[in-house]
Length: 175
Image 1 (cartoon, rainbow, N blue to C red):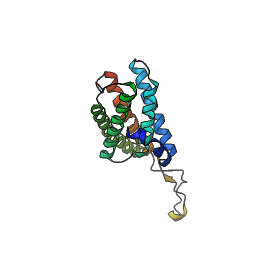
Image 2 (image 1 turned 120 degrees about the horizontal axis):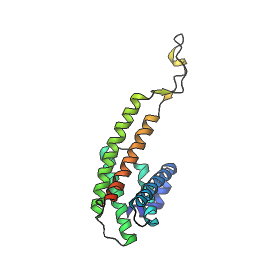
Image 3 (image 1 turned 180 degrees about the vertical axis):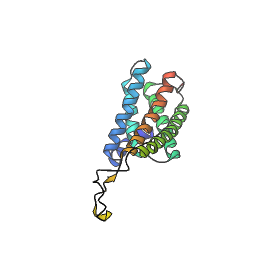
Image 4 (image 1 turned 45 degrees about the vertical axis):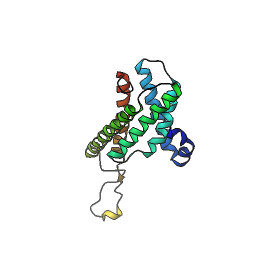
């Protein structure tokens, strides 16, 4: 409920690119989960997931406890709004716990994958070959490679979003 109330402020204060990415990820994973589940598709649920994810995605990227807290807040808020809109009585606390666990698992998976990618991808990109006759400060050594971070963040988002979808598909996340 807090996400719905903070909607006008959040979209004004938060970076618009991150809000759009979060909205697309949340709505996309929710729609995929509904379509895979074989139940009736509920567009309002997809909108709620997109809005909630759009407001929480820019805040992601902290440590383990921050990821768990953010995942729990997302899961609980999403379930509470769906309960209100669709007049359901599914367990908000269980959804918050699942979101918290998914946030922690996503953090670990993303950190591990990012570290693994940084071992195998080059440390610097877009640089010229090193000339031993010139001082290093006068050479183009390139920039630090951002792709290991992108890989880790992508894996983190997929794991955080896939765990609730899988549990919901099994019918155990929101009984």
